[in-house]
Image (cartoon, rainbow, N blue to C red; front, top):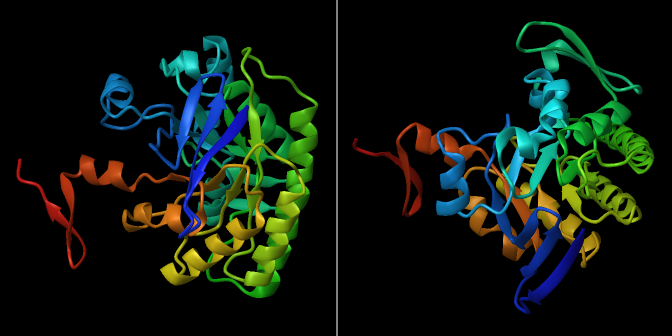
Length: 299
């Protein structure tokens, strides 16, 4: 997998590039449609490919692990064969989903024990196990298993969470490097920067992530309730530290307004968000009239 930086903007941090994968080229910056279970809701795969020309899809390790399960996906020959999508796929590691299950999970050094939101069954996610699941899914880009730090939180908790994410990353890298892809195409592992909205923690985490020499890097733990100005500030801080010749993935930004902000502020990034898909399923329309507004669309 190779990233080519094509051009930069002298007046901002904006950049344009191409990430070359075995399933195709991803032009950047790019917006990733969310296909949590391997399909984007209310959008036919033909429309996603031919009409929208989406160069990449995001799917989720946690949800695919629970349903349909890795055995089914492996039997089909990987997620690309399972869902018929012949372009790149990125899988979240499940860290954010585990974060959102605060009432039915327990975080330890080993990993995260949680109850399925489907049937209440008990499960354990470890860094090693999550790497194995993503190998079975066959995503082109696999995310490291991390703890998505909640907001707001105390600095002591954010620091403890950051160090746990770093230790888990080392275990992810060791497992990923000791296993091989299952379906004949290359897979890459992206580490994730954490540190909440504390600049010193973000700086330390970005510096640690930068030492790993990954094909690309991600900035997580933002757009989880913090003020927008803090979100932008933390993203810029991280982008100033992360390698300039590697792609950067800003995880889960929403609502729609930051789509126009992420390039100039964060340089070359990748953005994913389920918000526009939710709005189109609920017959909503985005328009600009002073502030950002949503208006119902007449059927």
